[in-house]
Image 1 (cartoon, rainbow, N blue to C red):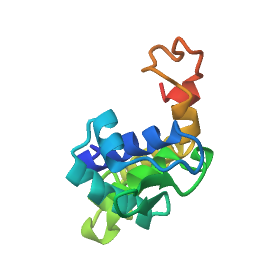
Image 2: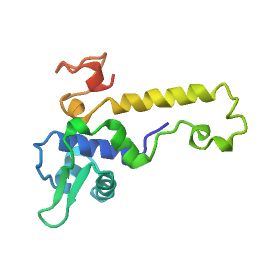
Image 3: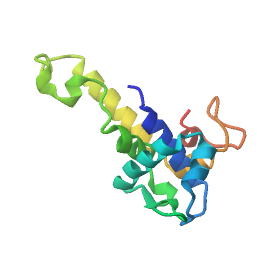
Length: 153
């Protein structure tokens, strides 16, 4: 599984907004510049996040973005699936009827278990966790003392 560029940019956008005060409106230009996201693409991403209930989009000269929920209530899974759809590792999980082996295939259970664990890992990380970790983590702890669960390492 590989995240799309839209999912990567959506994660950046929500992370940036998570580091701002609740209810603070941030301009599209500021988010785009700070997180290195093409402004036109950011507009499309913001619409997808708004449809998923993650973001509020305010139009106009004084418009911008703000989170629709507290960062602690927005999981990494929710943002990824808002952009890329439900995470599936292969075709047999997406539509078992495509594979005649699906009912008896010994590998099907492995794929299903891996998908379940991966989704659970992403669901366990909130943007409050990520926003509290100021730098990339290595070896389980970053210099700010974030835990492995907070950093995803």
